[in-house]
Amino acid sequence: MTISSSTRKAGPFTGTGTTANYPFTFKIFQASDLLIVKTSPTGDESDLVLTTDYTVSINADQDSSPGGSITLTAGNLAVDYKVTLTTDVAPLQGTDLSNQGGFYPKVITNALDKLTILTQQLAEQVSRAVKVRISSTTTGDELTEELFDARDQAVASAASAASSSSSAASSATAASSSATAAGSSQTASSSSQSAAAASATSASSSASSASSSLLHQRLRPWLQTGLTRHPVQYPVVSTAPSITRSMRCRARTRHRRQQPLRHPRQRLRHWLRLLRKLHVMRRLPLTTVSMIDTLVRKPLTQR
Image (tube, rainbow, N blue to C red; front, side, top):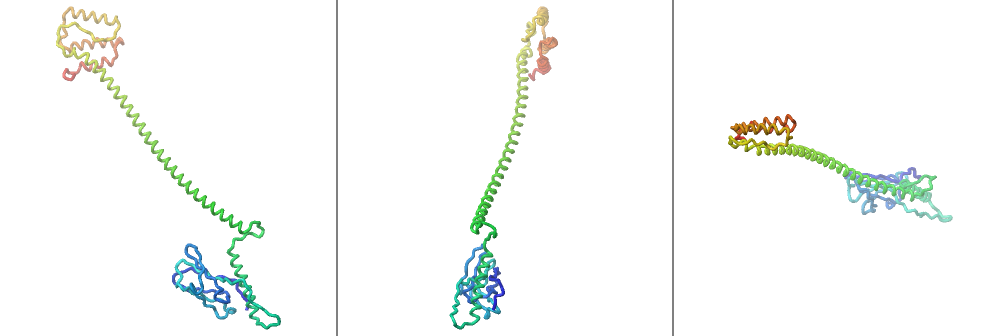
């Protein structure tokens, strides 16, 4: 009987947790010709052992109904596990034909079938091998090495890309922190500028207060004393001799006439008139005259 199918593998069958029996449809001579491979969910493979891990049921007529089935002794195949069935017939020739001896045609048929099975086994294994084109000068081993090198480079590139991504994220975080620090520095600079402006304003106010206080201290004796007869004493003012000459003449005239300035306020008003004249002649700043005028208009109790 001829072998009409080139199939030499059954499966892989994926376990569902409900089945332990798996069929095959290729011709074998005995149960030991089978090779059963179990695959875990992680891809690890292991060869099962006859009678220990499985049992075989072979169809009676392998010529007209090739194949049979196996049964796992451990029970149903677990979920996500796989089982694959093929043959592992030894590449040996056991048929011996003697000269002028009698033999049956089945002996020749089985010997030829075994050769066909060995060829199919090789074809199944080669179909899973890494192959190069017929015109290529690269061997299969060299191609395999190139593939593994490419894999290693891809893994290294992926790790480098992940590191670069992490560095980029760190740089972005540092840039954000720098921007925040720059904003804080700008805010601090603005606060310092405002504080400097406030300090300048305060210094100006302090200078004005100090000037007012100095004038107040110099004029206080004129406001508090009750002298009715006293020579008129002018405040220390830097003026030209031509300006002070008329003032001194008026003072001497008043002194000779013995006309007292009866009240300190009256006396200060007299001085204020003179100081205004000095301002008109550009010998005394207007701010000084204004401060004196303010002091004159205040009650004595507020000084």
